[in-house]
Length: 330
Image (cartoon, rainbow, N blue to C red; front, side):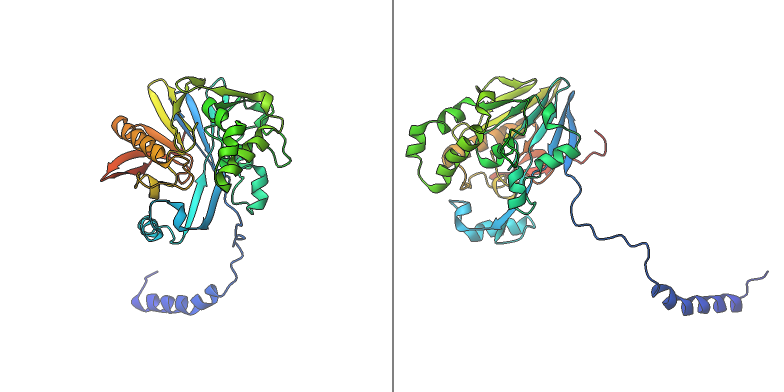
């Protein structure tokens, strides 16, 4: 049949007339609006070892002048704005690790704990649920390695009802951290409510059926297969970082050498309110980051935005975090 210009115009007019009817029809295939994120975990390989970054969530709170003790709030806001983050508030992420060495299942730091999930309305305390979603049973964990004794790193050692989260695991803690925070004399001399709360919380956690499982470790030695403990004091007296090595591959697990990279990677001279010895923390930060730049080593940061790993470049007087490319395969 011949398609004339008249036929084409008639068909087009009919289609336009029908269009409003089509648009007003109900969208029966619409999905309900989701009310939560998918479980947050991300895996990558370091040689033969598998690193599983598992989110514990994120905490958002109003920004105060005291958050960075040697910088005014206006300057902090300028850095947040430059990083496309909202002004006048701060969001801190938490990312513990589960490392499968092939022979051992190793947890590095434990997040804010199950009890914090309810009190924070689900914003933090997600580690246990995300770990289960990633396919890991806490009873199968062989070793838990703690970097330091702040609550966002040790509270996840306990369940919501104060039972050991990892009942079959040995708990390894920095010897210098244990010596300091378990010393009654140091506790009596500690100034300020926040530092006193660190002492009290460490006792609460480790006295809940964990003391017999705790083994202090020294810097400069492997605490698990291929996992070297590295002295990184300043944030706390026994603050520890780690280097995970397998074959020729490495990743530096920095713990809290920096907090959020938009502020403290870019500005290594900024002193965080949670750093117990700010000058020592800054010296450690610069030493570690100069090493990361020189060796082009991958770095995993507990407080980096999830999945919390990348590489570091020198940038003026500071550094810049380059997120590692996301991979759809392990």
